[in-house]
Image (cartoon, rainbow over all chains, first blue to last red; front, side):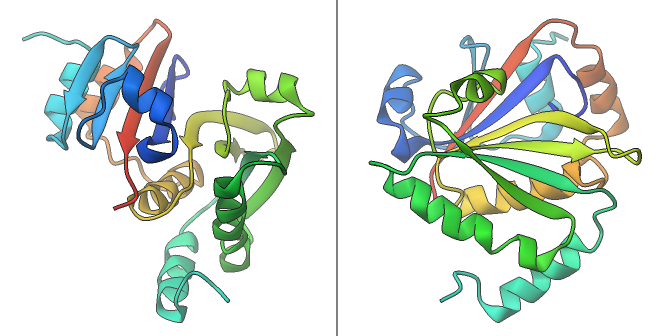
Length: 59
Length: 147
């Protein structure tokens, strides 16, 4: 997604190495995706659903 | 002692062969008090021998604060992937890795290298269009663990 749009930056974060981030974003299971510190997506989900949730597209 | 088995090296070499453009990996690291930085260096060192399209460039996180800030890096070990176009110009992929790229993270790193190196995106055309429509700064963080 980041590679496809210059407005998007993507971080792959190793949660166990950074307990401060794991705490801040309440990482209790992985994978967990956080978008703009607001949207949270738990687990691996189908691409269509992931894009819709990550970009907050309704309908 | 290599971390990758000869079989894994061969598989990766075949995958990397499909890359059409060079990728530069900016590796942000520090020499003191960072064991994961040493592990990450060992992992990254295994990649350039498998492809002439992959280059690792070390950036000193302590001495090069400006560069770290430029790439949004506030901790180490960290990696930023840069693509290179046909004219040799560098472009920031805005794909970052924070922490040691072991286990699943290593798989993600390999996929990111392939993508930035010219491999087809895994996004469907519909989803690519949805992603292309994003017009405000968006930060996506994907948390995972090595196992």
